[in-house]
Length: 232
Image (cartoon, rainbow, N blue to C red; front, top):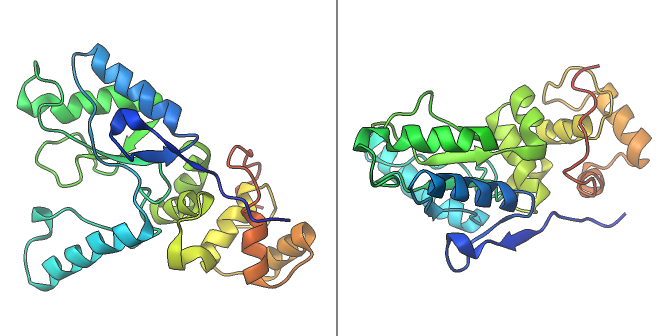
């Protein structure tokens, strides 16, 4: 099999050079239209980032924390491959006056309300104009079950791997288990350790036992595949 990544596609509606995962383009444009119907503008301060771009933000965040400055004063930045920006399925939306006719304390609420029906979720616990990361929204699409069962970071890893931007995390064993589950193989309860059951599933599917060979093969599975088993 040949390694195959889901393509990133242009989405000029969000600015020159803006790209996203091809399956996310429709939801992004639908959300933009929904915001416009409410008299607002959905503007992306940041959309898809490469691992290198994410590393720059991560380094700045770590320097800020190491300087003893308060975390809420600076945008949190996860490691490359652990941000859904690498998967092309995240947006940092402008939350300042996105809806010119609405009060300032309702901007995030309105973004939340228009995005939620289209599958956009938030990483803060409630819509709140005072919280850091209030601008970050994800649309998980085919990776929602991975995120729900294996956690946010693993969901981001799979989303990023899907478009070839998982960086150093592409050999993560938890990610490998997630991919095995994603294509419907029975490995039992995922625990981040490739045990006998995981390797048996890998051999059945690939006839290979080398992780460096297995992961590129698993990448050939389309993100539209149905995850048919979560636990054994």
